[in-house]
Image 1 (cartoon, rainbow, N blue to C red):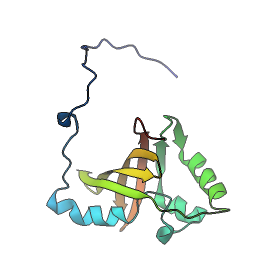
Image 2: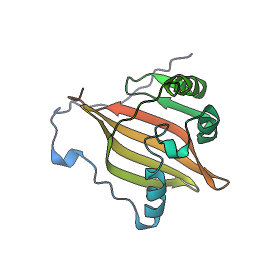
Image 3: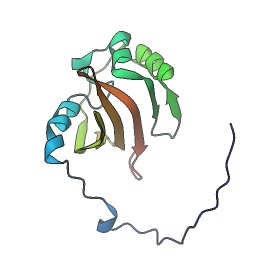
Length: 151
């Protein structure tokens, strides 16, 4: 795979964290019904209401789907589906907390859903691109990013 060198402009950052650093994310009033629909589906692949079989996950994940895990690794749709097959051979239950959900319309029938996920001591920021196709929702892309200082 080719690597491209690019000339950039950069500066020395302070490296400090302050209140101005965090964006204020407010879902637009017209997107709140979509937020409610997508909250029922997140975290993706973990909501039994939408099925736990490979065919359910194949319907949920668009053909072009891929993801970036909290590790920074990229995962193909095929790898994710195969992993879900193994995971649901012996499913377990747990309670996770979704914090600060936000939804933004990106294009016609394409929405970006973001939230913070608390899985015990593990905290990740989650981003999912969703599209509404023929009346149902499909995932185009998903990313989980670990929050520094969490397990």
